[in-house]
Length: 64
Image (cartoon, rainbow, N blue to C red; front, side):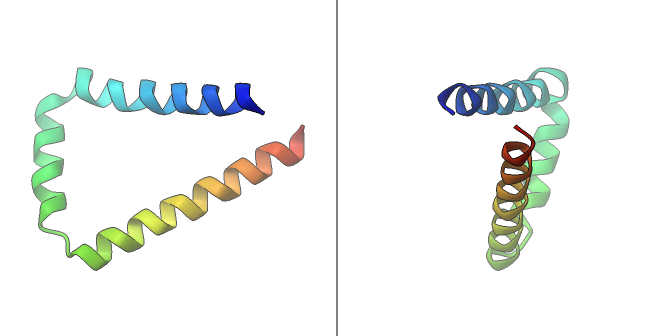
């Protein structure tokens, strides 16, 4: 279980690092656009991402 957590964190860091390395100017534009989104909408996006991640993790664990 610990290995899966480390692998998941590592993959998240690789994906986020790719955004910074390959498209730094697009990232700045995206952050400006995100700042214009209301707080409640950002909160719902975050909660949806958490739920989707939990479903994916549960699904992956059921395959093992």
